[in-house]
Length: 450
Ligand SMILES: Cc1cc2nc3c(=O)[nH]c(=O)nc-3n(C[C@H](O)[C@H](O)[C@H](O)COP(=O)(O)OP(=O)(O)OC[C@H]3O[C@@H](n4cnc5c(N)ncnc54)[C@H](O)[C@@H]3O)c2cc1C
Image 1 (cartoon, helix red, strand yellow):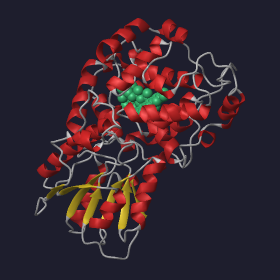
Image 2 (tube, rainbow, N blue to C red; image 1 turned 120 degrees about the horizontal axis):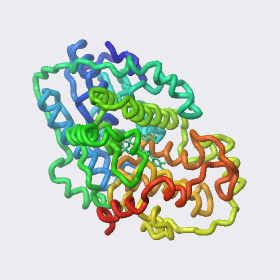
Image 3 (cartoon, helix red, strand yellow; image 1 turned 135 degrees about the vertical axis):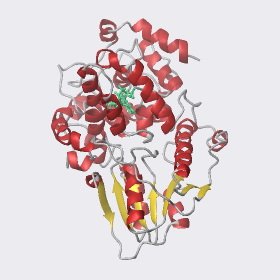
Image 4 (spheres, rainbow, N blue to C red; image 1 turned 30 degrees about the vertical axis):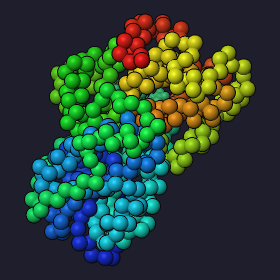
C-alpha cells in the first residue's frame, strides 16, 4: 500500500471487530482522502461492513455560526459523494465522547484522521479511552506525514525544509481510489444540512454573519481551478502584495480538510508556468504549513507564550514589556477596527467582512496588536480570540504558528528597539514603501466596510 507510512495504530484490542468505522474528523472530503481509502481497504480485506461517522458538535470550542456554516457545507458534499459511492454515512449530533458512548461502544475497527492540535488530540484521547477497539490514525491532511518529517519541534523553515523535501516525491504520488460495493446504503442525518438557518438559533449571540465563501469539496475544487487559471502565473511575484488579489484563498478549505494539499500540488504541477510560481506555492503550502503542524503537534500547550516561543524572543519581549506605548486600544476598539491606523483598520475590516486577511496584512495586523496592547499575554489572547472568531481558517495550526510568529517564533533576532526588543517590527511606512496601500484600502473598503 503506497500510503502505509501515513498510518499509525494508536490502540489495540483482542476483541474481534464486527465492522469498520471511519470517524471523519479532520479530512472532510472524499477525494484524496487517505483515511477513507484505508478504511475501505480494511473493510474489504476483513469482509466487514463500513460506516463513515461525522460528529457535529455545536458546542465545539470556539465554534460559531460563521464557521459552522462553512463546516456543514462540507458535510453536505461528503454525504452526497459517499451515497454515490454506496458507503453508509452517519451524521450524529453531540460531543465526541457522548456520541461514541451512545452508539459506537461495541468492538469495531476504527479509522480516523490524525489530529495535530493539542485540544483535538485530547478530545480524541478521551474517546479512545472508553473504547475496546483497534484504532488507526491516518495522516491525511499533510503532504509528508508529520511524524515522518520530524520527531521534534523544529526551529524554523530552514530546519524542516530538507526533511520534507527528502520525502516529497514519495508522498505526492497519485493513488487509485478504491471502489466499495456496500450491500446497504444507510444514511443517518441528525443535523439538517439543507436548513442551515437553524444555526442562527442554535448559536445565538455568539456569531459573526456568514463570510462570502461556501464550504465543501466541490467549492474547494472551483477555488483551486480559478486560482490556477487566473492568479498562479503571478503568484511568486505578487502573492505578498496586498494591493492586488493574487492569493489562492485555499486556507479555509485546507483547514476543514475539504481539499488535500497533495491534490493542490498535483494540479499546480500541470500548469504551464514558471518554476518560481510552483516553488513559491510549495514553500507556503508544504514547508510553512507543515512547519506549523510540526509546531502544534509538538507544543503540548498553546496557551502559554513562554513554552511556545524561542527563549531569546520571550526574554526580549519581557524586558520591553513596560516600555511606553504611544497607543493602547481595548479589545472592543480593535474588534471594531477603530484605531488611528487606516491600514490596520482595513485589515480588521477584511477579517470581519471576508473571514480572512491578506497574508501580508495578517503579519502587520498581528504586529500592531503587540504594539498597542499593555502585555504580551493580553496581545496573544486578543489575537487568538479575534482570529478564531472571524477567520474561516482560524483554530488551525497555521493560526497559532502565524500568531506566534509575530512574537518571534520561527524567526531570527533583529536590531533591538522599543516594545519589540529584538523581535521583528513592522511599520506603516514600510507598507507604503513596498506597496500601493491606497489600493488595498479601496479594494477592502469597497467590498467589506459596513
Ligand atoms: C497573525 C497571523 C495569523 C494567521 N492566521 C492563520 C489562520 O488562522 N489560518 C491559516 O491557515 N493561516 C494563517 N496564517 C498564515 C497565512 O497568513 C495564511 O495561511 C494565508 O494568508 C492563507 O491565505 P491563502 O490560502 O490565500 O494563502 P496562499 O498564499 O495562497 O498560500 C497557500 C497555502 O499555503 C499555506 N500558507 C501560506 N502562508 C502560510 C504561512 N505563513 N504559514 C503557514 N502556512 C501558510 C496555507 O495553507 C495557504 O492556504 C496567519 C498568519 C499570521 C501572520
